[in-house]
Length: 77
Image (cartoon, rainbow, N blue to C red; front, side):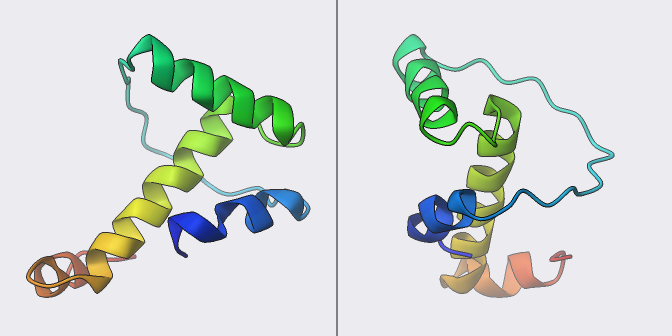
């Protein structure tokens, strides 16, 4: 999925997914405010859902790029 596809994805019904790994992020205040604003625009998604989707989409985008393509495809889901 591309990052630009996320708003359309967030408009669809939320699908539950298994997320066994946990990370802690420290975001600049401006970025945190933007994530909170997205969660308000898409009430079916919380900040964690938005961040998970954004990170997944960014990794998908990087996987399609060279020279990272070959390195990241090897560890793709």
